Image (cartoon, rainbow over all chains, first blue to last red; front, side, top):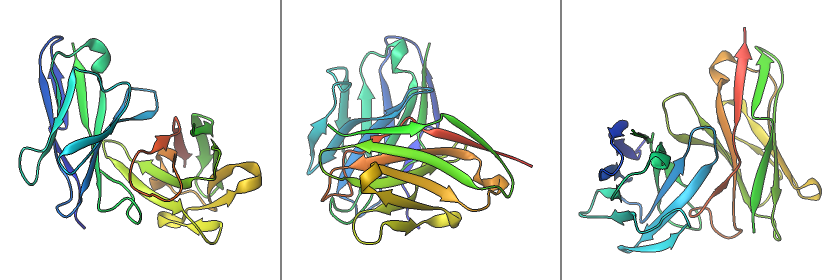
Length: 114
Length: 115
C-alpha cells in the first residue's frame, strides 16, 4: 500500500538554525498538510497546501515557517530560525480528495532544538 | 468552533479485557469523526471513521466505535485487548462534507495492556 514517507526520522539542530523537513506524499494525492505534536500535547494543524499554494494555515504557522513543493514528489517544511519551542514531532499528511479520502500520515520527524 | 475531548490520558487494561477509550466532541453541526492509532515510533494510522449511515462503525484490528449524537460522543471499544494494542489513540473531527483537510485532534489516550 502506498505511504507517505518523511525524512529524516530525527533531526537535531541548534537554536537559530534553519531546518528543512522533507516529505514525499502518496503520488496521486493532491492535498498536502503539516501537523505537529509537542511532547505530551495534542496533534495540531499547521498548514494545508493545494495547487501549489497554501490553502489554510494556523496561528502557529508564522513567518518563520514556509512550505514548498519544489518538484512533483517532495513537500517540504522549512523553519528559518528555530526556537526551543519548535521541538516537536512533525507529521506530513496527504489525501486524494477532500470529500472521499481521509488523511494518510507519515511516520513523522522528531525535531529537537538545543 | 469544533473541539475534541478525550477522557483519560492513560488507560491500562489487562490482556483479554474490554477496551473503552472515550471521546466527546463539540460542534454546532455533527462533524465527521475519526480514530487514529499511533504505535511507538510510527505515524498516525486510521483505525475507523464515521461519516454517514450506520452509527456503529467497525475498524481494523477488532476496534469499533459508536456515534451517539445525543451524547456528542464517539467512544472506541474492543471486546478483548491484545498486547499489540498498546499504543496512543487519537480521536479527531473534521467539518461535515469533507474527509480530508484540517483535522481537529483530541489530546490522545495512551493504552497500556498488561499480561
